[in-house]
Image (tube, rainbow, N blue to C red; front, side, top):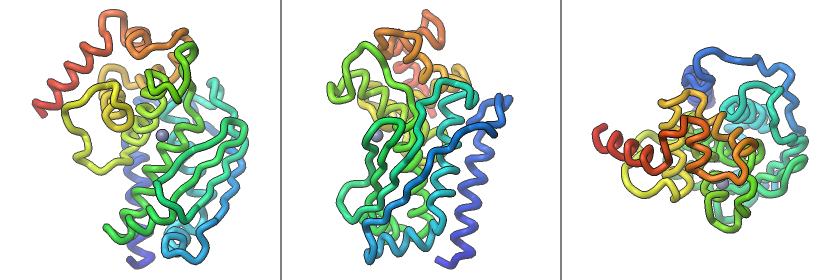
Length: 257
Ligand SMILES: [Zn+2]
């Protein structure tokens, strides 16, 4: 794809996030005082086709990552004055290994790996536009892990319980809310306990009940201790609506639409 086309894809992506209404009606803060972390971009995939493509499409990864960071924090918080995990440094590593992407470490310093093989596969599947779309989508998910709050008093991520469902569901909810998945990915079926997109689309749908749902749900981890899905949703939306009733309502809506 020609550079002009790449730029228009990038413009379209930026434009579509800017106009997606993710900041709900009134933008509460201008975020000029937000402290961006230091981005330490490390290329471990030199000489691969994936790196060649990445480098051609994203010549300034630091700027690209910072643009995505602000989308993530605006989805999770009202303003830079909120209680946001203090990520001071992000090591972003392109690696020639299998898998897609993963986040490691905890604030103040986190590491995000991204697979040059995934870049190569996306390029092969559908060209530069797909690489940009995928890279941004995956980055939205992993950066959410850096900046999201965590449930308290209900074990750990490794238990695979509601802690895990929250962490992975919210990461995909933020990706969904910022239009980071292909249209048509939302389907009926499954359970709110499935994590990732299944949970993420449900959480994003709950913004139709309250435009600030994702921010309030994130913040509920500071207010509902021990944390739990049902308790947190009732805390945010009112005591009368529990997670199972809302899930059923959501399924009915999906089947009708
Ligand atoms: Zn994840």
